[in-house]
Image (cartoon, helix red, strand yellow):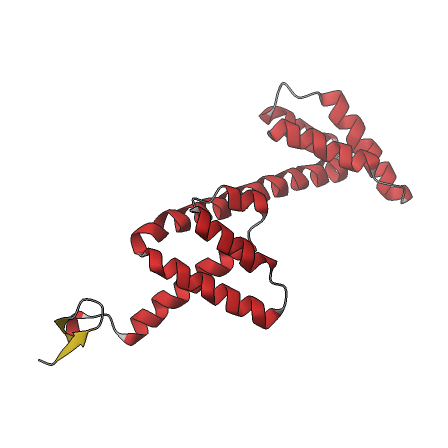
Length: 176
């Protein structure tokens, strides 16, 4: 069995007990993707991520860089700072980012459901409204019917879609 000197601890570690170069590269690329994801967040999203002040400032510096090559270097430097934290400190960052992604997926699905119902109410009329009222008996049937009819008329006449948008808002409140 061959032994190599481990530079970090100055202790000899058997070569087969250390991670392979491929594994180290995969880990480094994962941290780089994490750095890129942090740099791509909005201010509101970034505020919800658990970062210390130094890292938050580094993310802000990275976000401020606009030129492509300089941005790539800034992201690589941010990844280097993140690698210094270690795996245990990166777990909450990854969890917070995944939580944001899952939240965004749920919101997109909810909006898609509202859009689908709006389209059904406009095209199918009372049949779709009856089905919707079974799910939401407390909904204002008359208001929804009126908005759907106005939205259909606006679309057919190619007029501004005021009722179309109002129907969307009403459905979004209903699905809450």
